[in-house]
Image (cartoon, rainbow, N blue to C red):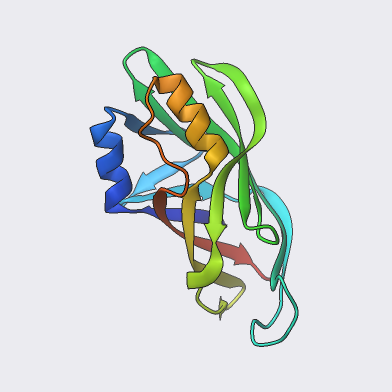
Length: 168
């Protein structure tokens, strides 16, 4: 099971403009323009979005041992060990600069579920697809400080998420 983020062309262009080279960390993969992070734990409840129950996706999804990196010159930032809280629409993760921990479980990304497609069950799995992944103000500040820029903006679109989970 995994969370994949199809990277938006504007994000790739922004990385190029900032001279940042992306990479994967641990068990993460980059395939066909998507960063893929294995799900290592957690539990999620999904409620019918046509009902009044909100938020209709609740729980936590963990991605220990994977992440991605951004490198410029002699500086490398690793964003790893993601935890998704769909109830608050936030993604948290650990931040390391040049292999030294800077922050544990920082608020890294906003998850905009307004474009989320209905749950798509298939056999023993289900897919939640369509959530927009946006850089948080916290992550923008950390990246700007680390890479000595002001170009990383809060709510910059990173890509669109596709979460595939076991249902049995």
